[in-house]
Image (cartoon, rainbow, N blue to C red; front, top):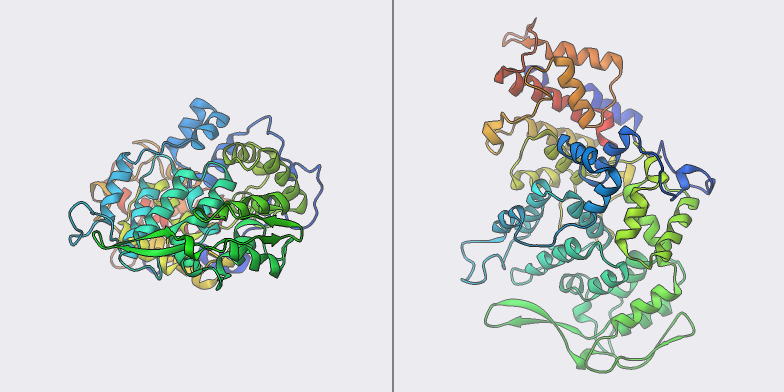
Length: 511
């Protein structure tokens, strides 16, 4: 990298600490005008050229020239339909390659990949995020992972395969019915272990899962349920235990009728749950009555809007979107289609702070630079967001909470590491794709600023042109030297430096 950039954080990064980011340009907290386009889930009738980039930034980890071309060819609405219907075939090349990261030399024959470390699980998923041809599948699974926050922390070597299964359920079933997914998560082995479901037994109910079921997974804290409801639900969530298969040395979850509370439970004052019998669990009864009596639609609406539309969605927008969710009976594909083709979605440009995973994976996918999954996991650890290892059942921070001085330094350090990384990058790092083989400095600057969604002032652009059209000598002097797109040295030094500068721009933390 150019000597001029080896000193670390740029002035643009420092500006972020002063100006902040997020919350503008879209729906905001408070009631809001229901007739305002920023609160409308009505279909957008005319798509503007910048709408494509906005959709890609919010749903694909970032913008790429290839994705732009696909939208231009098939149309934005058809692109949304396509991204909401990814194949679930495990044999796609990027999935096959990533699965190798779960394997260890000590794995028994026939059980390869069944005893991963926690780091293995994180790196397996990160490799898929970077290399997938259906990025929204991973992007939406990451949202669901934050919502149903479960970690490999606390799982032993015979149990960590549960974390792989958990993530696969989110990837494969996330676009189905949300009610069904809630039930699936309640029975999920990693979730049962994470929230003490395996120790929730008849006569000694453990309330951990029941409490988070209401507070985090379905309706939010103090929204229509009582402590008595938590206690009654915890009785219904009994029956599972953690068992060991002596032949494989793998743990598995098993329903045990002797651990189930078979007596009636009273929820929401007048709803009596009759047991399904002794041989099956009563989990579906709790899920069904919760969706029937509480406002799950409002909680899901708020969570989706916080993830994809605004760090502070208005009450009017939440109410409008909740009505869509109810009308679609919690089927996620039509719900998400309505959202991503709505006026509200395209009114919310640059109103959200990017989470570290979104920022880091997006930079890699957008620029064509690479980083090993192990290094990427380490850098994300420095930014406090490692997939498969949320800090608690509450998941990760939201929005502007990421804009601490430490968090921003972590992003700057990641960008620098991505720029200097060479061994993992194609053609020894010479695979940066320019807009053309004869591109000028101005064209290269505009190309990458556009892909990274950075709006440059006239002065910033002038400074970057001066940087690209000059060379820093070892003695510290800077001499005029026009950028040459056919010169590998110019590409590998100046374009890398340009990407580093843009990655640290105030706009780069927003989407």
